[in-house]
Image 1: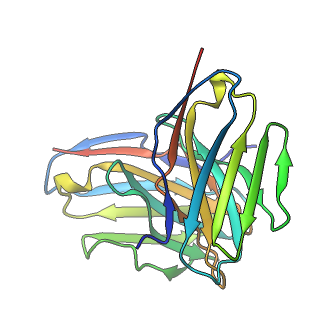
Image 2: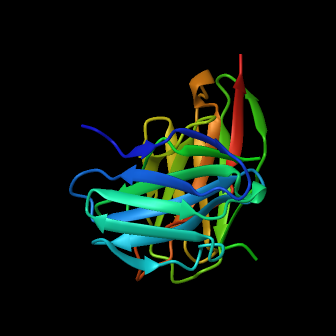
Length: 111
Length: 110
């Protein structure tokens, strides 16, 4: 079975550019989570959706970050404009209940 | 105070050793508890759930002390392949989200 799919796996961009990260959850999972991981702050929850509806976005750092889930099989996390401090690994995870299954992550570098 | 606190380590142990990791959580209403494992430059993966009565999975034993708000993971007969970061994870209840600790790094040496 395919797990959670994320793209791109690596992204290098320049400050001020728009970045879009993509996620395809495991089929049948009704919850989707976006996390950011850095050495300093560890794994931080940014936002999560239940049945495609955003439930908790209190972890979204600021207005530069936005996330959408237009249907059960696709979600995006957008950063506009990007800044060097956004450099991190961004994980998407999906869940049928409490156990979360993570994608391989997108390693973002903002120069 | 962080919601979930762990000793970051690193713990450096020889093969065959027994090692224990501890974790404390701040929300006494927390409902469910887990240990996840994260290999270097990989995604976190569920290692095991933690039940009130304690539970074992092969060489791994997890314990929960609700009164002290304390979770532990014991690894017996450590293998080189156990080298990873172990994340203590708590579900605060009435929500589907999980709170992850910073992780404890284990390095098992030959």
